[in-house]
Image 1: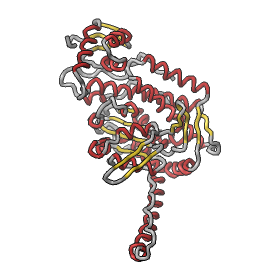
Image 2: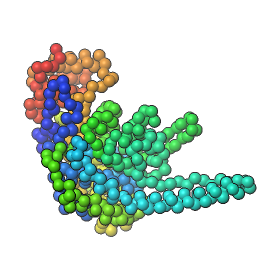
Image 3: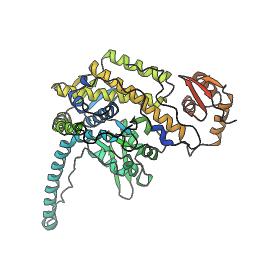
Length: 461
């Protein structure tokens, strides 16, 4: 279950002033999660049975878990004393043509649900239009009350939506799924011009209260417990264009998976290419049944005692000792892992006709799968965020911080271990997280081995 701490999640970046920032995403993480796909719940096992590469299989599995989790706002697990539902944020990164389309079949798992909601909304609109036509021609003259605009129910929302529109959707629906295969579609919602949604995305991850007020529209919208799931895929440049700052917390809430560049042209007519899509469409009615079973009844999921102990031990060790991942990534990897376990548990209970019991216990099999995926995502996500930090120059950097960095570099010996770097950093007023970020800067340091570094000749005087 535990990964080898001596593994380096990422190859060092190319050196030189002409470095291409997109290179940080050029390869996937070195070791893929060792998952027994035959032991997954049947839906997920079937979905991933015909993927062309192990990387695409992992990406499709996670995308499917996120999509299924978006149907579970009534399912909760107590985490730090608060109830969380299995809403996840996933970003699959790859170069153009490198396989990010492999996650598209997961989007079709909810196609039957969407068709049913579209039919229901169309009927509501038909009745409203009929009543409104009558009111315009007769009712208004006789003082009758104008018919209310119906409340339409949706599951999915477009990424190309303004921040206020996203809040409206969250406030009027039990849960919402955003699934975009071109990540720059979020540029509108993240734009300050339309009211940046970044803070709302951060709040929704933890189901924190969201409110919206617009003076011009005399509008106030309240969303007491937002439930939002997100699946994105895009190129490295799309990630870089959307990440305004890795320090604002949105990055650490996203589970990143990087697909490696394809080494050769593959047969586009191979039958297996269409198998996941056909499987998703065949499973869609079954997923509709799952949604109907969950929507009007509350369920709780709980870990067994020995699982809770292993969970706490696993993430405590990584939080205290991890050299390559900032603390926020590890903290939120715990939340992500718990949510994966919830989805696996609910889907398995549904397949075994056990949703008659409102209290569901995580099996050891599903716990192992969740922990394995969670550790993989922790390394992959932390790797990307650390590399972004080492290559992104913050527009808010100030002279005082630069002075501290120069002092830090001057006082370090030519070679050193992490504990020594943290001690020197604290002496000059740098936080542990900042020191760890500096250590990922390959223009200043060479990483000799795990926890051991050497200063490069080109460091500042």
